[in-house]
Length: 315
Ligand code: A3P
Image 1: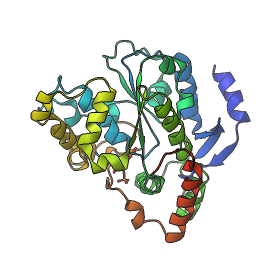
Image 2: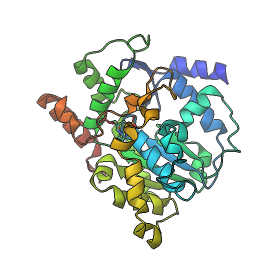
Image 3: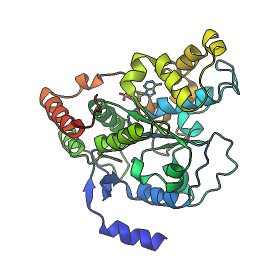
Image 4: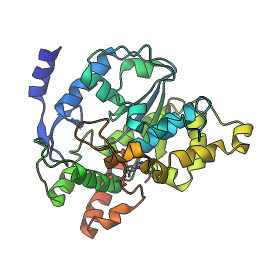
């Protein structure tokens, strides 16, 4: 399996990406080599269960938020939302909802059968790269999109928060980084192509894929929490609505609340090089205004407009 992968890897086009990491182009998307190896492993070995929930996002689209929201929605009867024993108060969202890429990075065929259902996994892979067993099952998928200008700006600042001594991360100017991002050469990118795949699927098969936008979550979180709960087959009851369960989940998972929890402020629980607090920066819509020049805005807007044009997907 490993030899086969090395052979494949050698044959793939390579570029440095928007964060200056070496990336490989496979079936239209860009991957770190170890991530691609994990993706191949879970494509081959992951056995979906009908109760599984897959949270798919581009990096920096709001993955951390989505993970916390979905965990809170699905575990709302197990943990009192505001109760002391709620796992989200003491554990980072990325540990509560692990990435498939991470699980299979450590072990090429992990035993996930004893994980209590519903099993919830995060992933950054495009729809076409999900394991066949996911597509053939009744698994629920939730995709979260975000304005690519904010994705880029979030990614750029995220890069600044990483330690300077990671060999694969050499310094890069924002102009160079932006140029590569616009070409789609970023981790699991192009993010617009990824979004389009899930968008199309959400229209063809809405019971399988729910397509969310970061901006809509910010605008009306209660409404979007109801969509999430309905999609997952656990709609809020009148009793819950009256008891303000939805509001409590929104508060629990708000940027303000999560980013101030000790567990999210300190430590490096998930990735050895990334501090937990790097996943919480500003949590705003439109922060691109603070970082992009007018000409960058024009370039990226044009690019995204070209890509989304005929799809019906709007920002
Ligand atoms: P900004 O850098 O624009 O602040 P990901 O989780 O996919 O890595 O995305 C990180 C982005 O989501 C960051 O955006 C981060 O601040 C924001 N974020 C994290 N938690 C959030 C929350 N609870 N509510 C809203 N935004 C959140």
